[in-house]
Image (tube, rainbow, N blue to C red; front, side, top):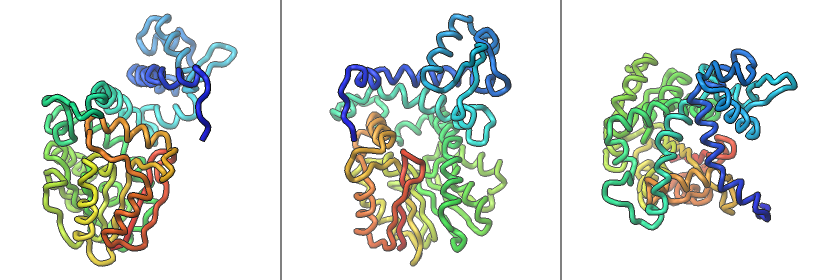
Length: 336
């Protein structure tokens, strides 16, 4: 890949946080939803957001330079295609709550401690694991509600991309509030699922399952996935965003546990932020791995080749790897 040469190239990275905050601010004031209803002038956008026109001008100018909105010769602002698809409340693929609630309100602030985490010098009271983070009911709810919204899109992609018509039981390890389990059970009526996650998260997940009217097919086990017993003879085990969320030294053991918990011919599905073996991308996957270090200081930067090797060493066959979320995540699968 091309190496950077200019000061502007460096500044583009250094000032990147300003762009992300402009995005989060626009979501906070529902700008993209207002623009979806009709194109607006600066004055109209200011009124819709409840802001002074000068503040609205500053925000819209920033968003225009980022390509999130456009403006025509008459001074009317419109959403970009990406904003229209992903940032408008109620849109099919909207994940604005995930960005504003989890990424902005939680993960963004945790990056302040990344230097200490990298040096393994986090103080005792710092958030240093998902277990510690999710032990706070309020934090667990904010994280889980936004993660549920953010996981529905990838869950639909998985349901379309993997044939589970022959499976009867699914174990979703660290499955959060059940976005993947709910989506897969809706796509495959014969499927029943068990979701393991922290107690505060599991309680919230039960509400989502009840809303989906799937209480008879999806059950939760509240506990730490590393310490909690897993049900045996499963047809499918899913680990989504687990490789990047636990200490790296636990991964080999988790893959072996999955092999032992699967029925003969069962499948393991590993979905996560992974980079290529050359470690030159995808950029977003590498950045996600980096930010995870802020509160999971012993996380491993996993590449696809290493993940495949872990499955092979645990005795899996028919190992395959393919992109799932373009430019961000991969899906590695194997048969027990």
